[in-house]
Length: 251
Length: 305
Image 1: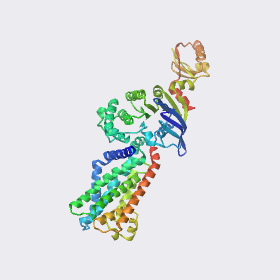
Image 2: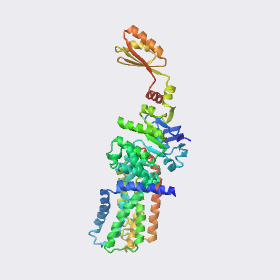
Image 3: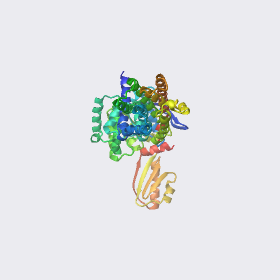
Image 4: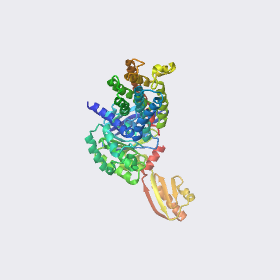
């Protein structure tokens, strides 16, 4: 029991540190609100869509962007700052450090994803099942936060290198995941590509919860999201264990 | 039981063997120095002992606990100031200490109490609300030491603790190491400052190209590793090397104006030769003295072998 308490406390310590250093910063907060909102607005305006139709994509891209925004840069940045070795010499493992990083990112992603949900509630746009939506958001932010940490497994101390790669993956995902255009309206080839995107299933389920019609059954959306999350977690831990040694040798 | 035990530690990176079957043991309450030139394997050895790196072969133990089999348990007993490590620049002094205290599983009450004590001892109390990025190098190093001490460790690892510090800051840290050792804390340090190691450490290991080349008390090492004495003589006029070479031919010597230093095993023979030189050249010898080689000279001889 005591060991568990210590483990949780050390994970919480990493989360607390991340929030203080990376998330509780004006520019990050502004970016977390503005970027998804304006991206969404650019597609919403001029298409004559009702607000109700736009809430689901807004929630999905907010969860996706905010959860995966900061995590890719934390480890490269801490390698460069020479704070990573200081952490690794303490009674904590690389796995617990990664869990702490993911937890902080989830909290950040969740708090921003709730804003469009609240906005919808204020306008009377209520999801079919609020509990399922909240559960899905927890799972989705875990998935996207882990994806962000996975990018940072690259053994570099230059954050821009990781940002470049993560942006090159993340931005196209928005357009091929049925975020702005429901899957049934996408061309065949795009629909095939969409099957491989982790964002597809989250967006599909949120759209269904707001009455927009699911393309896949709910259970499939949840299962694939959980599967992607599991794969990302395993890959993240495995790759970071390998690359942390090379990271420490960077001078 | 030893406080720190390295048994046959071996680590390679690609084709390079960084640490080649290094073994040593540090007794409780001892101040132990690991010395060596850049790239000798000191930091890799420390990283294996502190659980940051896994050895390819051999074992590292802290208070009898295998660091790689029970890393959390072993790391809970140690405090570490890694080489070139930094506190979080965007956290305050207090927050940096709080973070490390939380990693050791301390309660908030314990953390607060220890922070107060450490900040006073390390002269950082007034800077407690300053972000680490605004601290001087000396203050930053003291903060790192405070971070290593917050868990009240039984063993303290200091990798180059005084490197790049001014004389006053370096002295404060050396005094702290001495007082910690008096309080029973085992200290394992690496340093480039050979004379500092000679003065602070109870025992030193000299490491070169991944091997331990000497191990023992600094004074014993001087005697064991060098039979040579240093003879220093001062003359009333600058010396002429060509004439001197005729008398001191078999010896290694250096002339600097009126000063002469000779490395020899038998100072008596050198004195006789110098007296002959004085008679023939007409210079006058003002003073003559012999000395043991400095610890730095012993170190240089060992690592050049």
